[in-house]
Length: 150
Image 1 (tube, rainbow, N blue to C red):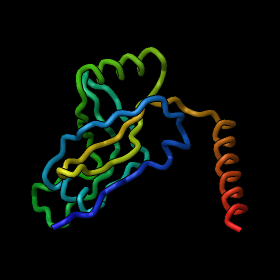
Image 2: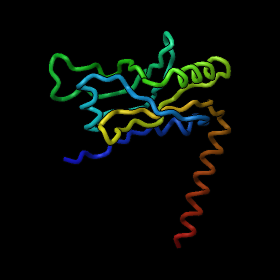
Image 3: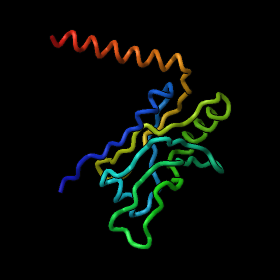
């Protein structure tokens, strides 16, 4: 039985932030959470990462309660631990502390083995004029694509 690919993106991240470096992290999940993700019922809107006791956590990530879950169903917006190597964690923690950068989730996906992974990025917030430039570039690209199709 082939399962369909799950690829949940955070579209606001590339608009609001300038991406500097990307990492792929594992997630610590319960059984009902992974079943909801496999069903595609998750979202990365208003999600961010933070450090607590030397560990990286993702906050405000939405994973819908599993429909067939019983009394041991999970809460939809609980904090979830991210799994990275100690070198990656140390590098990220230094960057966040010293340079004033932030860590934002970009994409939630499943591997071939069925494991849930979260693509995270070290990012710097864009100013308002940078966002306007991004919109202008996107509209120019769209206009050029339309011109070449004719």
